[in-house]
Length: 467
Image 1 (spheres, rainbow, N blue to C red):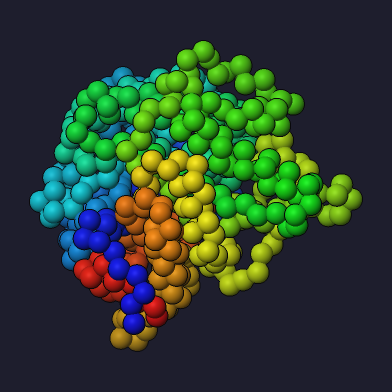
Image 2 (image 1 turned 60 degrees about the vertical axis):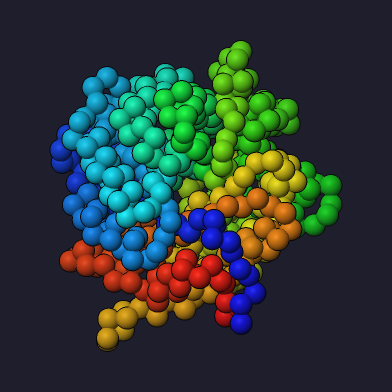
C-alpha cells in the first residue's frame, strides 16, 4: 500500500562531508584543518579515531559515484575541503585539490547526477584558527576569497552551491562547549563566530551570484524543534530563548535581514555584539534559491527552578561547558524513546512541524531536506547482508512526515539521506554508522545495506510505501 506519491521533479539525493569520507589527509598538497588537529589531540574523539583514512573516498571516488548512479539518485551533496584546495586558508590555491573536485563534478554530470557542493562542512584550515578562527572577522573575508577561487574553478558545472553546513555546530559546539573542533569553551567567541559565519555566508553567496549566476544558491541549517515541558510562561520563555540561539540567530540575518532583538538582549551579559558592523546584516541577507534543512531529533526544555539538579540532555555531546550561551536558566530534558545509536529521540512529526513553521514564516522560500538519517548498530549476517530494518523505518517515517508537510503547502523540493557511506562521525569516530552503504574500514569494501535497496526503489518510483 502506498500513501505518498512524489512528482518526477522531486530530487532524491544523498549527502557526505569531505573530512568524514575523503581520507588522504596529507596527500597532494592538502593542509591541516581544525579537525585534523582536534582528532589527533588525545581524549578528543572516541578511541582516538581520526579522519586520516576515513572511507578513502579520495582514491575511490569513481567507484562511489558508481554507487550513486546505481542508486538512481538525481543529486549528490558533497563538501569541498577548504584545506585541500587552499591549504593555508589564504593566498595560494592548490591545483591538485581543485582538480580532484573538478573530476568529481564532471563524473557526477557524466552520470546524470546534479552536483550540490557545500563550501564549508567544518574543516577550517588550521592556520586561520591559529589567527583567531571564526571568532574573528578576518576569517569571513578569507572565506570570501576561497569562495571566489572554487566557484571560479568549478563554475556553473555545480548545480547548487551551499555556503555553510550547520553553522550552529561550528559556532556553539566548536567555540562554546568544545565538543567539536577547535574545542574552545569561550561563550563570547561563540557568539562572534555566529556572526562571522553568517557574514561568510552572505559574502560567499554574493560571489556565487556574480560568478555563477546560473547556479542555485543555498545554505544548510540544523534547525531545532523546541518544545516546552509545559505551557507555563516560564517554560515557554525557555523555548523562546533556545529558539533564538538555535534558529533565529541564523534565520534572522539570513532571511529577515536582522538579528532578533531578544537574542541580543538575552546575551547582553556575554557580549555587546559590537562585532556586527553597519551594513553586515544587509550583506548576510543574500536571497536564497533553496533553504537546506537538516533534521534528526527534537528538543524538550523547561525553566530551571534554581534548586533541582540540572538536566543537559540536549543530544550534543558531554562537556563541562554548555553550547547554550547565556541560557543557564534552561533545562534540557530527556525524551521518551525509541532512540538511535546517537541517543537521539525519534520524532518524525516534529519534522512536519518544523517545515510548516518555516513555510508559514517564509512562504515563498523553497526548501530541501539536506540531511536526515539515523545511526544504528548494524549487524553483518553470515551471507554478508545487512538487514537494517530500523533505519528503513526511520527513513520511511521521516520521508512520510516531509510528505505530510508538502501536502499542507510546504514547498519542499528534495530529500538527501544522510549518509551515502558509513564514515568518520566526528567526536564519535567510527563507532556510529549512518550510511545506507556499509564501509568495512579494514578493507574499504562497500556493501549495500537493505536501506540502500529500499531507497533505490523509492528514488525509482517516487512512491513511499506505508510499511
